Structure formats: C-alpha cells, structure tokens
Image (cartoon, rainbow, N blue to C red; front, side, top):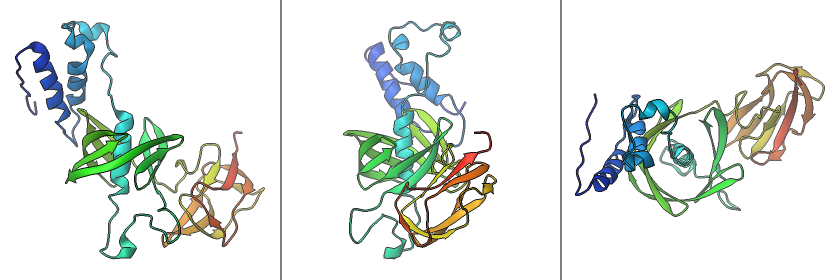
Amino acid sequence: MLGKVIVHGATREAARQALVTALDDTAILGLTTNLGFLRGLAASDAFRDNEVHTAWLDTHPDAVRPEGRETAAVLGAWALAHAQPRDGTPFGTADGWRVAGDPAPTPVELVVEGEIELFEIGRESVRRGDATWRVHPIASEAGVLRLEVDDRVHEAAVRVGAHQVDVAHLGHTFTFARPDPFGPGSALAASDGTVAAPMPGTVLAVSAEPGVTVAEGDVLGVMEAMKMELSLKAPVAGTVTTVAAAVGQQVALGATLFVVESEDA
C-alpha cells in the first residue's frame, strides 16, 4: 500500500464527489497502481447509485475504463513540443519562428493505443489529422501542466522522458511511447509505403529511383531542416514506385517524397 485517501461530507454523495476530486488531484508516476481504477469506480453511476457489491466486478468486468486518453495525449504532445532544450540564444529557441509567415508547427509523434499518431503543435492549437484543439497555456509549475483545451482548463502531472511521455490526468496515468520520428514505421512513413517530409526543409540527396528494390530501413534520401540532416528511410521492403523529391527542392511538412510498394502487396 502506497497511501490511503479518506474523505468526508455531509452526505454520501458529497463525500463521493470529494473522493473523485481528491483522486483527480493525485498523481503517481513511475509505478503501476490502481489509482485510475479507483477514480473510475468512484465516478461511476453504479457507485453513485450504491449498486456496487463484492461480486459486482465479476459481472461487470469492463464497467470501469480509463477516461480522458485523448485529452491526455494532447497534453503530452504539447508538453513534449515545449520541452525542447534551449541554449540561451535566439537560434536555440525552437518556436517555429519564420521571417515571412506564421510560425511553423512543431511535429510530435506519440504512440496512442498502439498507433503512431502525428501531432502538429502550433502557437495556440494542436492538430492531429482532421481533429484540431484550441489551446492556451495557463500558469504551470515544474512537473505540472495546466492547459486550456477548447475552453476547458485541464491539469496534469507530466514527465517527459527520452523514450516516453507520462501523463497523470483525472486519476489515470497514461504512458505514450516516443517512436523514432524518422525511422521505419513512423507516422511520417505510413504503412502504405508513403514517406512524407517530417518538417519543412530542403532535399539534400536522393538515393532511390523508381523501379529500385529496397529493404525496410534503407535510406531513400536526405533532407535538411532546422540545421539538422534527416535520413528518409523505406518504411517497408519492396519496390520504389514514386520519387517526388529532387535535390535542392524546398518541401512542406507532410509532402509525399517517396512511395514504396510492399513485397506483400
């Protein structure tokens, strides 16, 4: 046992709501606990209506499920995008500033429910595919993120690691892995064999041509962005069918550069 939460109230319902609030404000990172389950149970209609008994879980095994995973993923992506190291100079400020135009969004990849998802973090927005959230940062502190998402303020304990992001939100602790953003299987190297530009930049080299057979992980080209050289790798083994990149070409975020037809296609 790590701890015990005891609440009281004038009525059972008042005490129950106090318990849910207390569990919402509790975060334990680095350990697997039943905190999220207890929060879900206390917040459930069955517990509210006093229907829970010692055999209730046997007949309702899926009644308590983690809530807020999507919001937690948005919080985690925002925290990761703003956790980039800065060297104290304007060149070390990774805020996407550009001379002519709005700031470029910061691409972030996280594994959400087993799928690699690409988030684009803007100044006041987070976008994933067709979904967009309006965001506004609220005063935060070390390890605690407060973010207004679509006019609702959310608070979470967040820990950004080298290989994962942990987000404790609404009593549940969600762990989102950080994949290699430029390796095979990333969201920018889609399962259909398409290799897209991971960020706006310039194509430095093209080492593939249509009709060439490649192995998974082979380098198809190289591009430069933010003073970094990024290798663009084949997501699957197969035959290169499309080369839409040329040396010196300026490409936009998400632009299709190569397509590889899988051996199994």
